[in-house]
Image 1 (tube, rainbow, N blue to C red):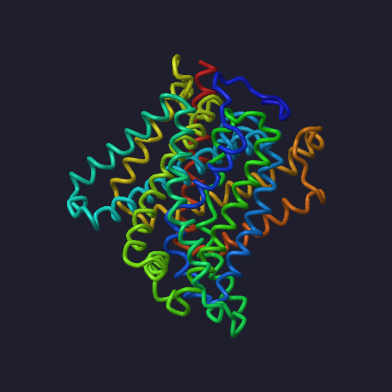
Image 2: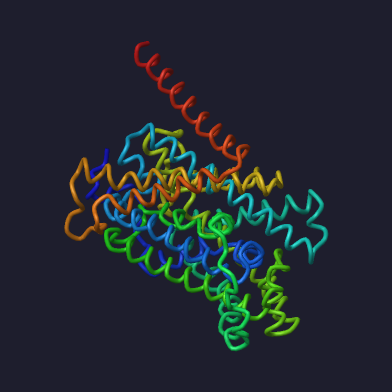
Length: 440
């Protein structure tokens, strides 16, 4: 097991700084959801929708304070998986790795790939047919894999460019929309019930997920003890500013009508602010946003596969590093193939629900890892990030995430439980077979 205060040499190049990590967080969190959720949440909470954003922000802040401390102590590749494995050992680490790289990253990427192709099919109807659709998906993922195999630096450049590209239409809408707000539309005539607030928060929480993926390339982050906390703070602050601002603009410009635009409320707001070209700009922004998220995930997701292979949880071939580019090329190719296979299935709703539940379980593991590492190794050393108030923040994080898990419908919860059960069965079977080989 790797000492928590050491930087493990995995043969990778540490190229990711604070700014790049912060942009990666923004890229991973701001995906397709922001283009629809202002209307969905408004339909649940009306002009009080902003409350759900603030609750989600507090929840995510608690969670990523835990990520900041553990991430400053554990610097090897794998992000959330590595943190759980370091704290609780290989069995828990194996389950976390599968839940993260497969249950969350790969399935969520497949789901948003489906959304991207469906969006483009509005303009290019041929993408509704299987063969052109398959060619597009394979070509897109092949390009993203090739860029990331060539080096983490080129992968970082790609997601920085894509993140900035998708932020431009959103920032334009935010900046111009603030001057067209009718403030009476923001008044809260009646405080919503606790049940309504809970329902709205659950709907919105999906849009706040994903920053965990930005830490998957933790083996390539420069000076992780400082970069991880600062990068998370920078990225999540940007997300909160943009989300709250866009909800305020949509509500202030459209008024009660925002609740009638549950599919594309920002497109409706942009049309009201700029005219028809504004709506087209936001449609293009949605496609760019999804593409940007994919480019970032193809950078981060394979690093979890790579780290799991180094820990002997997956076949060793997945832990190979390209002799020239110094990237986990086999893991990148494998991960991209998995995403492509599930994207071709086209089952968006199922993939999205399983992905969210899987990630919440990993998040609980990371929160508990703060307590475990302190118990085993003591408080973080000088230069490492330290949470205040002892175990209070990790326990609050666990309590809120546990509450969210309890809100899952039975069928979706059973699916996630089945994935965990399959992980346990596979791990135990593998242990038995290894024991037989050693005795032979």
